Image 1: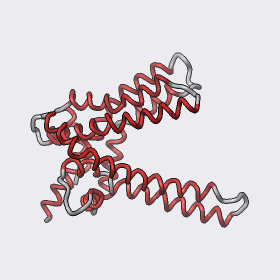
Image 2: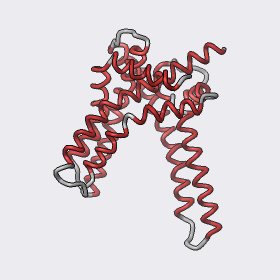
Image 3: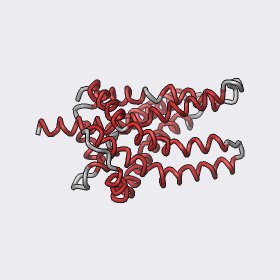
Length: 251
């Protein structure tokens, strides 16, 4: 797998299905946009809005992601982007994708929480305990990062491959094996497209930012986030296809 080729293929697929992918990205960003526009500091309201946001993500965000993977795969292979089969795929893989996503999220979050608690619960002045806590935290964070890369192809595997004897996490690990650092490089480069939008949205959401700057920064950042989001779906599929083809060539 060549990182430059993957990024180039991702951008090419984005260009081939620009309108459809952009619309799907807007759907996925919409829950965050609604939350920010409603904006409140009351704990109960924040909790209610967050719950609604999570439900909307499950109902709308996951189908939009599944369709974007299908469309991206068609665009990468220069095939027509038929939305009918893509929406049919949503019905087939929705619960499977949801279950595996929750499992992965719980595993990664668990490691991060354990690492954070290992440092936070050490009594003040206990230098030995702090060293042990930092070591546990480092091990937890490193393991979480390692798993994120190993399992990064979960989406394309669940959507594009039929259920087989191996689970999607094992399948993703098999594909990434031997290409770990190249996958890391590709993920970093693809993720870099989202950085300007994230920074601007954070700047626009910060109450300490000058009032005249905040709206412009927020809306410009939101637009950039929507424009950058399809790069993630096309990138994941490009990485998956590249590794699957390499696997077939060496089999």
